[in-house]
Image: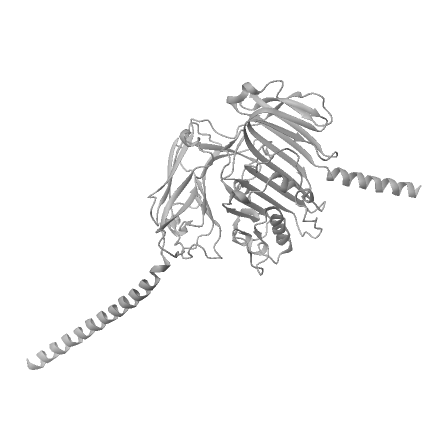
Length: 512
């Protein structure tokens, strides 16, 4: 009897581990409004129990995978020595991404990394000697291949990410942002280690989320990848027989929150079944919009101006502007304190006024959060900026470099009536907003003016910054010596002239 009970216990543990190792895949296709005529009964074509094709698709595709970290990152094994709960989120948006997801806004182009290691201070948690932090760093390096996790080993890469240059945010959160070359954006097959669809393009957006629970001592992983298509046929395959794979195609909308479509579960459904998803709107109407610009465009002390037009004012919500500034830009916190109250503006990140661009200790940049104070429907804000001195270059090829900053997020934050998380079903809140506001809030976005929406990515501003040339160094050194000597000679000549005047005046006094 005891042996039989032991056998049942071992079998139960085996089945639980097998269930936890099963990956869940959800492929979702959203037809663009102009392409709804192509959404017909032949759109979803079943090729067998383990293959489905979506025909003549124009719109946005999202691939969501719930699995274990080992399935995503083969070179990293599960650790059992975590000291506390932690979460890691990575969002990568390529420069060639489309501007919108149907149900949310996309992150600023580049790589965004958000880490939560409990409520301890930034200095205690961020360091390569901290085992939790080091292991998370190795997760990232295994995924991207561009993350530095050992300071003592020199990196041969021309492009790398040093998490020590992250910035501290409230509640023990750590945030890193950087532009990333398109060739460093991972492909779907390199992330998952297998090809579950005949997709040869790199995703426009990658959203990867790890979550470690100390109570269960397990790490869960969730991956989202997004592509944009134009009149293409996409075939989806189920490679692992144990995985659960479902596919949905959506198009017509009943109202602002309900979208009709069809879905199919691989190996279970012989025909697509009608379905509907409900999602609350994440953007305000087109009657609300904003426009931004940096002026003057060639200056060490420009202004980042943002003008906003609100069509509706909600008393129970707060309006914000969030600037994401790379480290070529910085703000003077003392200047801001003289201009604005502490309730109106908050700054996180690099605020050192003296460090030039290119120094290893320089943080990636800064976040500036502006709270709207007035209740007027027209709002304009000018943020005073300063530019860092750029490294000198060799040769006479150029006299300026171009520093780029993305347009800000303009958002409306409302407390949820139910006081419970309302994480969007598709395309969750992008970084760094998800680190600054609790999950119980609803974030709605204002979009730029309509003429800027034709662009393929989030708008950016460019500032022309003068730089020095190394070929001028000898002239600068010699002229510095000459001017210094001339200045000393002038001071000595003035001093001698004064002394002679005093002596002359003294001799005249004696004669009198």
